[in-house]
Image (tube, rainbow, N blue to C red; front, top):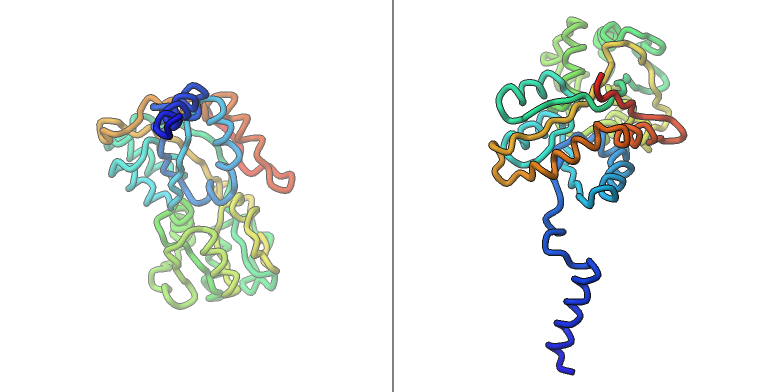
Length: 274
């Protein structure tokens, strides 16, 4: 049998078996999301479940929330899943998104060295703790990248009455990097930092560092999902994207989020529909 005929027969057999499907290669969506959801391992847990259910692959672009929103506004994504509600709602109001819904929440924490030079351990008022860090001029490392975490941090500094812009480069340092890289830099400097709890749980370079401030309602961290307006993104796969949004807000998707644990601890708490 000729080589060309044999190759043709093999290709036909693969198509019949479903190994090659003309539409399969196009059954994927792009989700613009955050480093916290990616670094925590959440997507590694829930996305295979969605793929098994629908046959749709989800490709995640993990950046800071501000960059994720800009990427989606530029048409580089089908779905936005981030944690800065005001910015998400503005994204929809500006016509870049069709709708926004709550998906899940966790919280932010302030971490620092065990020696705690500013003496903030056990405080439940995050702004007061930051004010104490500023008075002590104890080193603090910020993401400085317009991420959801950075936005939350800036709100707390404002409440604390501290102008960190004037302190930039001295005791206050900005990395312009993701959460994992920022925590590594903070560890190397013996500095304080604000992080989402999920990233901290999965962070492997803790050393003698620990959570020092937690439990303030102002550290609440809400995640939202937004369907990108296909009119702003002609190449958007609106049908596939709608299936993902519907799934992650469904009982099955919410249960998948709730079932994700690290060392037996739940890291994200589903709250679709309020």
